[in-house]
Amino acid sequence: MAFMPVIISGGAGSRLWPLSRDTCPKPFVEMPEGGTLIGRAYSRVARLEGVERIVTVTNRDFLFLTADAYQAAAAPAVGNTFLLEPVGRDTAAAVALAALHVARTHGGETVLLVSPADHLIRDEDAFAGAVRRAVEFAQQGRIVTFGIEPDRPETGFGYIEVEGEKALRFVEKPDAETAAAYLAGGRHRWNSGMFCFRADAMLRAMETHCPDVLAGARQALDAAEAGTFRQHETVEVALEPMQQTPAISIDYAVMEKADNIACVSVDCGWSDIGSWSAVVDLVAPDETGNRTMGDVILEETKNSFVRADSRLVGLVGVSDLLVVDTPDALLIAHKDKAQNVKQVYNRLKAAKHEAARFHRTVHRPWGTYTVLEEGDRFKIKRIEVKPGGCLSLQAHHHRSEHWVVVYGTAKVTNEDKVTLLSTNQSTYIPSGHRHRLENPGVLPLILIEVQSGDYLGEDDIIRFDDVYGRS
Image 1 (spheres, rainbow, N blue to C red):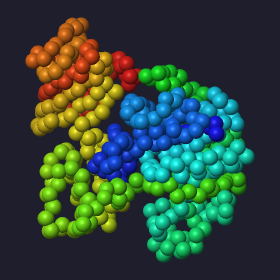
Image 2 (tube, helix red, strand yellow):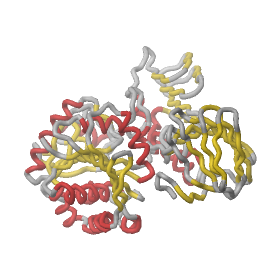
Image 3 (cartoon, rainbow, N blue to C red):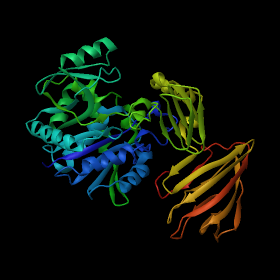
């Protein structure tokens, strides 16, 4: 069963705010059972029989997070190719990039298994069996979708009407009455967003049904730059052609229009983790229906979910609440309104609030920084640099910085001067100075940074040189 999995990683996961943020979206959120969704997706497809290489389509900014998640995953050793989008243009463009790349490098007859990075599958044996059936159909030239056998009248998913293995039509999210009729009728499956096809079959379908998407992806790939990152193959897709490519889902662009669509029905414990309600279901309830994570005390409380990440949370005399407490943001909602969390995220994003983009701890290719405190004209950070990590050569217009090393050794470039600092030593970076921080040691480097100035936003940065290609 030789084929090539394709993991598509995109989207903000706004319904999982405040855990999901722009710079650390849903695929990288730690699940109650452990591990990230993208790490589990990678392990799941890497363990399938016949897999030698995995293609991942993701935004360029998430390359290092994705590579870290793959390294941490319990998965067999396989080759990796990252197709790095400069801007997201929805799933049709991502599928086009993958199909074009695989057709060029491995041949148009290669079968692709497309899987989102942010879905959960509990029964991997059932999933593997469904993949085997899908590959057989795909080798016949058919485009295959996976339909999840429904166990409830769900209004939050799209549906596929089926007749045997033939997909008759795709249906939008129904109302409650229609969903109940679908469940009773037995002819409808949840649309999983997973697909299987020969690369050449998908390219022919896109040439017929969405030639503008295919043309844009082809131009973007033709002008791409090949490279490597931690021994992984990378392909940096060109910006301008991608910006001109229509943003449309693969469902609308191809699946609803093509006439050679097969559907493999499967019951594999699938969930798209589309809202906090799905996360709640992953935590076992106690005798009063409460589900908790972290340091939580409940009194006279029923049917509530509480996640406490960094401090004690107490609830008294309430029921049916959803409480998610992170170091810099607190969400309290009625459980029945979990889908509406997206509206909070949208308002934050419209206001350009940093809580839509960043966690208090922000991951970077070189390590992390955590905002400890901030106020008028000052901000204090804890910075941790991985062994061998190197920040960009940069300058700031509006702030100066004091660095105090608390663990490890720091190599500091400040204009033309390069110095080594050890524990309890410090340095000062005036506003406008070109500077760089490196960890030349084999242990983590930890320092405290105190910023002072009239503007302390993360966008006050000019990069002159960067080993991670961000300059």
